[in-house]
Amino acid sequence: MNLVVDQSVCIGAGLCVLSCAEIFDQRESDGIVTLLRAQVPDELSDSVIGAVRRCPSGAIRIEQPEAVSK
Amino acid sequence: MIADVLVVGAGQAGLQLVSSLREGGFSGSVTLVGEEPLPPYQRPPLTKAYLAGQVNENSLFMQEDDFFANHLIRFRSGVKVTSIDRRHRRISLSDGSVLDYGRLVLATGARNRALPQHLGAPMGLLSIRTLSDAQVLRRRMGPDRRLAVIGAGFLGLEAAVIASAAGCAVEVIEIGSHALGRAVSPQLSELFSRYHRSLGIRFRFHTMVESIRRHADESWTLTFDAGADVVVDDILVAIGVTPNTDLAEQAGLDVADGIIVDEWLRTSDPDIYAIGDCSAFPHQADGNRLVRLESVQNAVDQARAVAAHILGNAVRYDEVPLFWSNQAGLRLQIAGVARPTDAAVVRGAPADNSCSVFRFRDDRLVAVESVNRPGDHMQARRLLKAGAPLTPAQAADPGFDLKSLYAPTPVAG
Image (cartoon, rainbow over all chains, first blue to last red):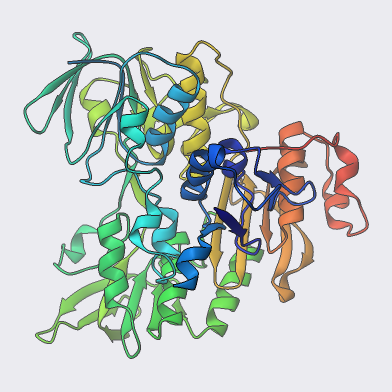
């Protein structure tokens, strides 16, 4: 699973960090989402999906490379 | 059937509560009851990405299909709680069943306010609160359609911007003197209406709707107190909400504008909590005045606070209130709660759609409204959390470093 974030719509709610602090972080200066790594290991996929689903501004997206190439 | 914790209302607050209980290791039985026939979903995108057609229904649901089963949470949807029997700790449901509870959490949310009575309740008016409301509105938008939005609040303006981008001719009718009335400073109100006018949206302020008539071709005529009238294809009514307090009232709990709770979010019955849009809680930063807030942050943080209370790790509820809105090229973030009478000090350039308005009451910072300045917003959250002594003169000075007033600790959540 690959993650993409849209920093232009992020509102710094921080719910993603609550769901999965191993993957998501907030920039010190403005609270906007950053990825600690874009590639999600399997054992974290549940909490990352939770973070994506609960992001109130829709700033996080999962990219499935295989689906795109079809 | 007994639930150690029974949650009424399967919105943002209700779902967060049951999630936080399980994350915190709660091993008792948990039941979540929701009135809509759907699993919990996000409401903010209903007037943003979903309405704009950028995301589909599936992305709105806040959990995977197997979430409730995996966490041993009993989820009952499409059923309404009809009464609370506090003496027997039991609720009755619209399907005739009853449920016993150990602790009860009311997360009943709010409903849209109806038009004033003199306008009647004509069939076919649009409203926006639920996914099905958004589906109807989304289908009705398009080129050459004329939409009247009654109410220039957050939901009305968010919908207006998206309808306009979809090709609708949009007219916003507001009884007050400006956009986003009590929610923001006059400076930001002006910025938003100027920006939206540049997108082609028309505003009528100080305007009361006097009558609404539907024609045979399904178009509508609105007449105003000022005399003029307008013909449109659709009317969206977005004039605010009323908290769902009926159940609490019938059960004899204290209710004002919202279900009254203490600093632990307990109602006048210590085994019943109220969280989210329906809850009126003592706001510590404002001398414990009761406030009722409609926001994701408030729903989530109150749910987490009650889960902690049930788990025995309680802290007094004292989070900095946060709000946001995305409207075309404007990203608005608000920290704190201002009143219309609070002073407003501008930092940045409103003309360039990039500024923050610092709100002061008796020279004490109470809220900061930021447009396209997420850095200011994050600093405001830290300043308000720390109760830092920012003066109006410092806020107005672009050379003043806001960071110098608080210790550099990150804020999460």
